[in-house]
Amino acid sequence: MTQDWAERFAAAFPNYQHFMGGDANSFDFAIDRINLIGGQSIPLERAGVTAIVGANNAGKSTVLREVWEKLSHSPGYVEQPRIAVESLELYGPGSQADVISWLGQNASFVVQGTDAGFQRSQMGVQHPGVLLQSWQNPPDELGALANSLVFYGNAQGRFGIGGAAEMRESAGDPPQHPIHYLQDSKRLLDEVSDVSRDIFGPPLTLDALGRTIRLRVGEMDMEPPRIDNIPAEYREQMANLRPLDDQGDGMRSLMGQLLPIVTAAYKVVIIDEPEAFLHPPQAHALGAELGAWQ
Image (cartoon, one colour):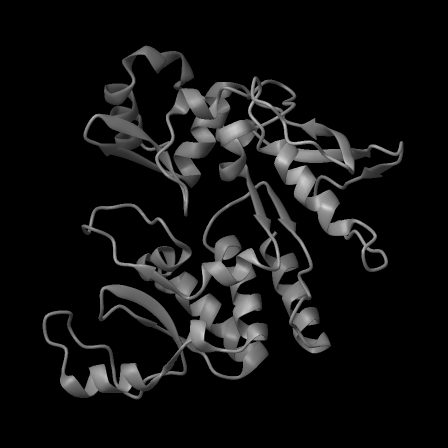
């Protein structure tokens, strides 16, 4: 927790001083076991990868979706009826102050007029009291905190992530989309581009010349110009690179899974049908990349 973060938090939430001084390293979260309605259970490793396999229409996607629904449910609200998952056994050492400290390191603390709170990629500003409402040791449900700790991606949703995002309103605004994180970090952009090069052949180039920032497939033969002196030739070359969101299902699916994970820290990653739309070598490469990032 930086001093700047601590000062802004203290100024915005004077009644939350007891949440200051936590230790992010003392906080962790994992799913130990999925208990199914039929009486069976699925034990999970706290570190590593667990694959749930089975025949078509056996209920694998249903289990993963209902795990996410259970995690993201807020106590006191009506639960959606489930047909597969009875309950979860969760692991969650750390106090509420430790959770706040971890969020301070892995989310943006934002003050917008009279509103203040934490913001992560594709998540609006969340009041710390709302985020901590469900946290206990160990937790049962995470409520609003689920979006900060858990990434859930299904075969349909990963296409919605795409390779484009609207430009932020001002230079000081925090990142709200995986593309913004790539815009802020050349290291991350180079790593994602190298994945594209290794698996599909061409690298990726970030196009920040318009109102929409997007990833394009290919590379430029010109050095990036100064932001206040962009020649027409550079714009023309950039426009001639095909956007990532115009590529085939395989490339969009793979990058749609990787982008949220490489640009943000999650304690748990749930991916349904990661191999969908991928040829076997691409599916193998995706598995290797996901394993390397966790």
